[in-house]
Image (cartoon, rainbow, N blue to C red; front, side, top):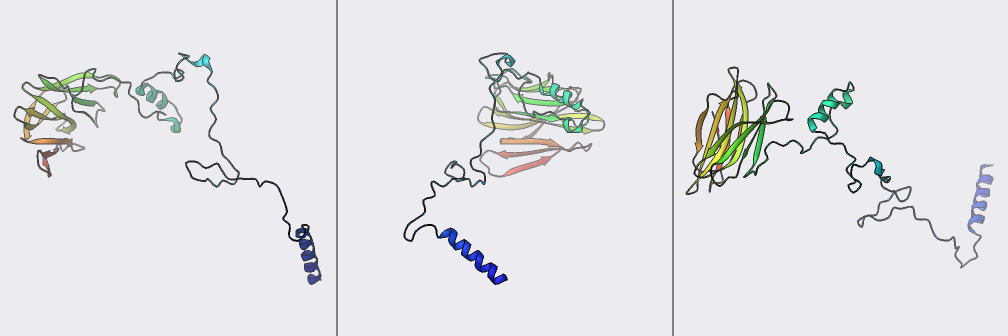
Length: 250
């Protein structure tokens, strides 16, 4: 019985393929192409054909503050305001802001010379930012402080060079003996290409100011402190014409 059934299947199959006379081809029409359109000379082999990107509907002009600006429907708020709004939510999934970066908090309105830096007091949460002013005379390192998470900033301290430039502003915050110490770093570019690397430390209340020279020929430098209460300060720097990097601890 099995052999008879197999013979019947073979006969039916042969009949299905034998409808075209010998020597002729079967014209089945154009074949459907289910592959995607090449993108950047790369053929995307997708089982369901071409895929389309996300569709953006037309803007509702009534939502725009300025009909000539398509992004003016966005409501302005500072990063701090957004963070506070989301952190007030009881849902832990929404406990952080959707936007991580923005540039809407002004710290210093003037021209910056060679760079900026900042650090955080890990105990109080206060922020300290430092910059150099790029002045022709009395070029300075200026430090600003924020006690409300960066929403507002106030002047803290400045250090200047009366006969040259200051560059490479760096700042770090450390703790020792119940006191918060602010460590500032900069390169004093004197006449004759003398680049003195200086550190200046001061308590958070503005007292006990101390200057110390680290190098007399520095080109780049950075500073940091221990986390905790050991109060060590660390400086790394490179000297002019030297490919070596130096490090010191105080």
